[in-house]
Image 1 (tube, rainbow, N blue to C red):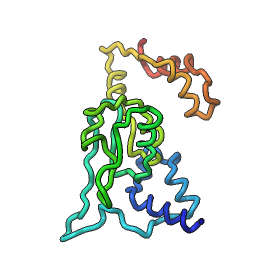
Image 2: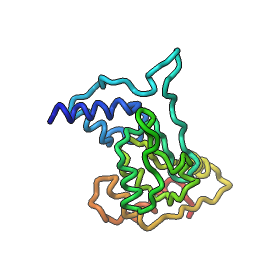
Image 3: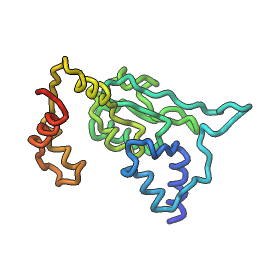
Image 4: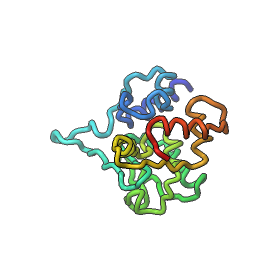
Length: 195
């Protein structure tokens, strides 16, 4: 059983580019945890984009889906676990992503190869939450916000969802449901938010 599970982890690792040092999920990645648990340091299998024919990749990299305002999708990071499909279908009941193609060309994409912005995606973030390897990720507007905070001519306003003050505590190891609304507002004012 152990050898079979280790083989599965190696196959997952062979699907993934292992860009751990620059990945948002570094340190909280399920694939990293499994690789550590089963002592997988280097998979015995080649990544699909490492297979060459006449000096060119037989399976070129997939393009990123960055059209959605909230969620990005990098199919090259995907290990084809299907957790995102399950969350989209069975938790949110939206069902806009699924497995596409066959064999070594299998990937996860929105219906008919469209972008997430072009389908009925509600940008709920369930795919982001369940993705173990950051193939689905939240898009960041940090650079835009930092530029606005540095601009003395702008009056910067933060509009917060009430859920943020409750859910942010979990990131800091607090019990689920701990309210941090006052601390969050204080932190935003401390970094320069005007209102």
